[in-house]
Amino acid sequence: MPLPKVNLAEKFAAFSDHWHPRIVGEVQDMQVKLVKFQGEFVWHHHEHEDELFLVVSGQFTMRLRDGDVVLTAGEFIIIPRGVEHCPVAAEEVQVLLFEPAGTLNTGNVRDAKTVAAPPRLV
Image (cartoon, rainbow, N blue to C red; front, side, top):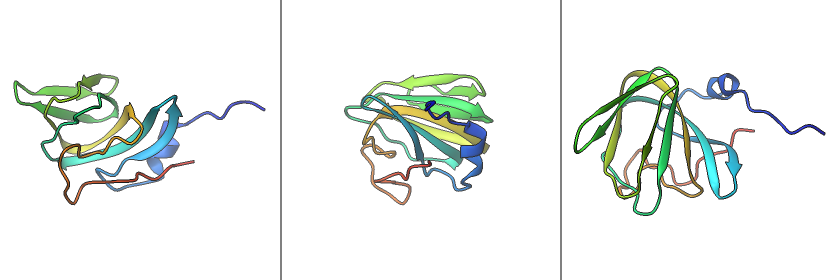
């Protein structure tokens, strides 16, 4: 039996809310998540986890304490553990996240945008 493939457009079409990641795959102890951003997130950091943000469509700004980075479709940024950051998107953006399993989306902050157990899209 062939291995299943993931169609990003189909997966992104399956949800419409913002800042609520969905798990779409796993690679060893890492998870592949999809999320839609719009507006401003919360300043936070991850004590033990690095994160990769890959823009699938749209554009967003990763605010960092030492300067902002604007990312567009086809670009990614890796945020090392311990680095405080805050994603901001003027308009909806679709992002693929690659991070260790169990990474809390709001890191060291607990608020209304915290998703303790992201659902799986199968």
